[in-house]
Length: 303
Image 1 (cartoon, rainbow, N blue to C red):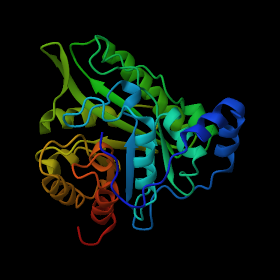
Image 2: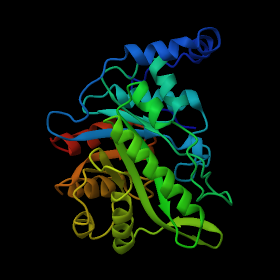
Image 3: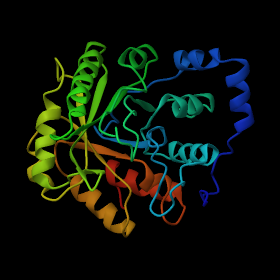
């Protein structure tokens, strides 16, 4: 497994983290209470967030490596590198990952978004039953996190979709009551040859946006997390909600990916990017370099 090549890669003291977790679990609660927060958006009204909630859904692969995210120490080192770079605004993760980063002191002054539903395990027969097994809205508000993200896959031929929509709507309502961002990540999905696939054509994406935008009793704090698809200008015209574009697991030339991000960021609804594997596991291993390119695209400057 490759490791970040930057000379600034932080050392992750796994023994110290585990020691605190074992001997002083209250340190987590105290850490959240003492954490220095910041406004949701940077001064330019944009946001770049690194995502690390994939492992909790059993999704450990990056490109051809099925267990690229299997080492927690390696993942934490990559996250710490990313969060140390100027222009990175925050992180999206599950409680286990975010609590580790908190104990490492890596979340000071950062936007922190908690991942809420990870029950639809990748490749399972119940993958579309996306139960809320991570953060609750109450915990997100109580701990001073800055938002809650929910994967909301919509498959018309799978009855589990109804429960997922109901749970997402309830989370949007509860987060809005706490004046906290609800980040909805919708996909129009289907099963093909027994595998769940997200339909990434423009029309399917527009349908997913329409359904996601109407979830909950208030849209005041609703954001969307959307894929970069063809005809994105027409797709984004389906909403007025502020949106972040996701990076996915790029398979081709990274420069093509960066160019697509740059074009997409010109749209008025697009307020930034949420990128995980493309920044944490770039082909050349240079996490800092990949983050700096993305930050230049989101916040301005040459890329």
